Structure formats: C-alpha cells, structure tokens
Image (cartoon, rainbow, N blue to C red; front, side):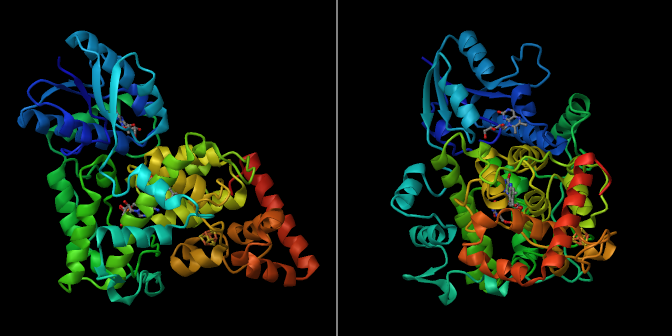
Amino acid sequence: MSRLVLVLGDQLSPGLSALRQADRAQDLVVMAEVMEEASYVRHHPKKIAFTFAAMRKFAARLRAEGWRVAYTRLDDPANSQSIPGELLRRAAEHGTDAVLATEPGEWRLIRALGELPLALCQLPDDRFLCSHAGFDAWAEGRKVLRMEYFYREMRRKTGLLMEGDAPAGGKWNFDQENRKPARDDLFRAGPLRFDPGETVKEVLDLVDERFPDNFGRLRPFWFATDTGQAEAALDHFMRHHLPCFGDTQDAMLAGDRFLHHALISPYLNVGLLDPLDVCRRAEAEYLAGRAPINAVEGFIRQILGWREFVRGIYFREGPGYPGRNALGHRRSLPAFYWGAGTRMNCLAQVVAQTRDEAYAHHIQRLMVTGNFALLAGVDPAELHEWYLAVYADAYEWVEAPNTVGMSQFADGGIVASKPYVSSGAYIDRMSDYCRGCAYSVRAKTGQGACPFNLLYWHFLDRHRIRFAGNPRMVQMYRTWDRMDAGRRAEILRDASVFLDRLDEGAAV
Ligand code: FAD
Ligand code: DLZ
Ligand code: SF4
C-alpha cells in the first residue's frame, strides 16, 4: 500500500528524513498551501510569498526527480485549508491511511498531526546538528544551561575549528575583537538579490490579492527561493562579507540595513541550505586564509551554537514555553510596532526596515525592538506574536527562545543569564540612529530625554527584588543607588509620565 509523505513549507530539503524513508515508486508526496498556516499569525507578505514560491519550486524539483506529488495551491477549490485537512483528503482520495512525516518545528502542528485518525510515522528532523536526545544528555544534571558550554561541546563533536583537542586560534570565542561600531562611508556589496521568475511572480500576485492588509511590503521581492539561488547567496556572503562579519556584527546604520550579515536564516530555516555545510564552508574560508578567525568563529557560533541551543531549549521546555511571563509584564504592544509613527528614531528605523525587508539583524531585534519592549513592560506573548509574524525567518522553535527567553527574560533566565536591557548610550555607541532623533540621548530627564534612559532605571527599580542579587547586575544597581534621591525620583516620575502617554496612544 502506498503511503502519504508530508512535506511542510519549512521542510524543503531533498535529504528530509521522511523522503529518505519513502519509496519514490509507490508513495505520494503531499504538499499544501493552506490558510491555517498562512494566518495563524499575520505573517509578513514577503514571508508568505517566500514560503509558497519555495514550496512550488521544491515540488517541481521532486517531480523532476521522479516523485509523485499531490500539491494543493491556496486557491484550489477543493483545498480544506489546513494541513490535517489536506492529509485526510489525500488519504481518502488515494485509499491509504499511512502517513510518513518529519517532526514539525512547532508544538502546535506536532499536536495536530498526533490527533489525526491516521497511522502516522513521525521521524526526527535530523537536519539539525544536535538531536533532542543529544541536547537532553548535555543538559541533564546541569544547574544552568549556557550556550557557551554547549557550543564548545558542538565544536568538539563536529571538529569544526578544532586543532586536535584545542580550539583554532587558541580561544573558543573571539567576541572581544568584534562588536565595533560601523563606518557609514564604506562600500559594502549588500545581499545578492534575485529577479522574480514566473513562479515567484505568480505567487506575488496571489499574496497581493489574498493578504492585502498584512503589515509589510511585498515588493520589491528579491529573496532566493530554491537551493541553487540560496547557494549563490551563500557564495556571495562568503566572498564579500564573511571577512568583516565580526567587526560590524553588533553595529546599526540607518543607511545600510544589512552591513556584513549573511541574510541566510530564511534559507536555513526552510531547508534550502544545510547548517553543517554552511559552517564547513566558513571554516574553509578561514583555512584558506581568506577570512580571519574572529569573523569565522563568530559566524559559526551563531549557527552551531545559538541556533542549535535555542532549538534544544524549545523542545526541552515543552509547549508552554512561549506563554511564559516571569516578570509579569502586561502592557499592550505599542501601535508603532505595526507601523504607526514614533519620534524615537531607532524604533522608527528598525520597524520601517522590518516592514520593507521582513528582516532585521540580531542587534536590531535584541537591543532596539526587544530592549524597548522589555523596558516598557510589554506582554511577552504579544511581542512573541509580533516577531513570529514580521520576519521571513520566523518559526516558533527559533523565534520563541530568542524572544521569550533571550530578549524578554520571560522564561526566568533559562536562555539569558541577565536581562538584555540598556539605556540610549548603547544604541548611540553602536548606531547612527540618535543623530536623527527628536529625543536627546544625552538628556537623562525631562521631556526631551531619550525614553530608553528613563525606562532603563524604571525597569531596574521595579524589578529590584529579582535582579539586585544578580552578580552581573550589581554594578548597575550601585550606579542607581549612588544617584541622589531627588534625581532618582525625577527619573521615575518622567518614566511614568512617558509610560502613561504610551498607554494613552499619544505620539511618543
Ligand atoms: P547572521 O547575523 O548573518 O548570522 C548567521 C546565522 O546564524 C543566521 O542566519 C542564523 O541562522 C544564525 N543565528 C544568528 N543568531 C541566532 C540566534 N540568536 N538564534 C538562532 N540562530 C541564530 N532567528 C531566526 O532564524 N528566526 C527567528 O524567528 C528569530 N527571531 C529572533 C527574535 C529575537 C527577539 C532575537 C533577538 C533574535 C531572533 N533570531 C531569529 C536570531 C537572529 O536575529 C537571526 O537569526 C538573524 O538576525 C538572521 O539574520 P542573518 O541570516 O543575517 O544572520
Ligand atoms: C510559514 C508557512 C506558511 C506561511 N504557509 C505554509 C503553508 O501553506 N503550508 C505549509 O506546509 N507550511 C507553511 N508554512 C510553514 C509552516 O507554518 C511550518 O511548517 C510550521 O509552522 C512548522 O514549523
Ligand atoms: Fe533611540 Fe534614544 Fe537614540 Fe532616540 S535618542 S534614537 S530614542 S536611543
């Protein structure tokens, strides 16, 4: 009897475990564009278009390689508009109840597949470098889980950047040489852009018609949508950007949205690129003397370390993880996250970039939109939904630990050892945003003072009981306590006035 082989929109890898296990001559691949997946959050139009275009091209490739593929388009009249519904429909059509699947990247869908009245064989997603069992074995018995130690183990396990038992270059981590501000007068090649072909154009028209009100600009659309293009984008990054990756990793410039970042997370997350292959390519650049160790180590750490670590946390912590709210934050997400105006230039810049590109780099996500939400006490669930919607690379297994854990400390400190909060001084040091801002980053109180300066102390003050004893935060509290009482009262009062205005929906 033939089986159905489910391939989801983020499982577009020829070596997917379900495809490896299937029989090309007998089994039927099932792929479906469905409203349930396209609307469980209000995804950025570029994310929907990227997913559908990559799915259509992948289906065409499978057919060319001899697979039988039952592909449902979004506007197909028979479409049941959900993945479980499409599996049931195809099962009835083809007289089978056997389904082969690779574990989805979200608890929501894992649960939905498990509840189907079909004989489901769910295989591990082995496109990652660390299995669930491998992560649990590493985590077991540790009081706290820190990425840095996990990463060292992954370096040893894969042999990446190892010289025998020692790390290449004599150190595990070269971050001290990174984190520089960026000059705004240098030429940078920028990401490789692809002209939309027939398949992409068709999808763009569909997304235009079906998702006209979603936040985000659909055009110009230039993402890679198949493996060949994604490989070309990776080559381009290796040649033009990897050597400087570390230097500008934390920098932000209004006039250069991409700096030396790779822009490969959407391609990795749907399976157009393979993480180990990407790391080996970067290592080869170092070994050939074309890229320095600080750049290559920093880049590999993001993929081999952070990407695998957050996935391990997501699956270890279970379905309740995205709903955590350890700091009890309840404020609604301000309207400017969805494009309403704000006088804070850093936020205006990052939100406009997000609207246009469905992309912001890590420090923009962590230290601008994430930092503000944490300082202001925004409900982490609302923020989680925002990040899941607006970025082309957003899937819950990677987005939730980054948002709920790293950025909002809402998991109580599982991912981060201290909250990522900063005043305006950090943003001023790492970007040119403050130059064009209506607020003054140097002013600490008063109406024109940078809101980050006010809210930073407000955050520390209101969470004193939780954080004053944290060794990494002692210095912050010392500085706060050394200010005279009148000054502290003024800062807290100004911060409260700002938060009241934010709640009233005033233009802040
Ligand atoms: P580069 O800076 O060039 O890094 C190379 C690669 O390393 C990335 O493509 C990515 O695969 C990996 N990487 C880097 N940092 C991380 C990280 N912290 N966690 C996991 N992988 C990482 N990344 C996502 O892929 N999807 C998300 O939904 C997502 N949500 C985030 C939400 C918040 C609040 C924060 C702070 C970070 C989030 N990240 C997410 C991590 C990171 O911001 C993006 O991976 C990165 O910006 C992607 O751009 P790039 O390809 O240019 O990355
Ligand atoms: C993100 C996304 C979108 C927008 N649409 C689809 C879809 O129509 N069909 C599909 O199979 N997958 C889609 N995806 C990706 C899924 O949401 C993703 O597979 C799950 O969230 C699990 O990670
Ligand atoms: Fe952002 Fe403050 Fe700088 Fe304005 S002054 S850009 S609000 S950090």
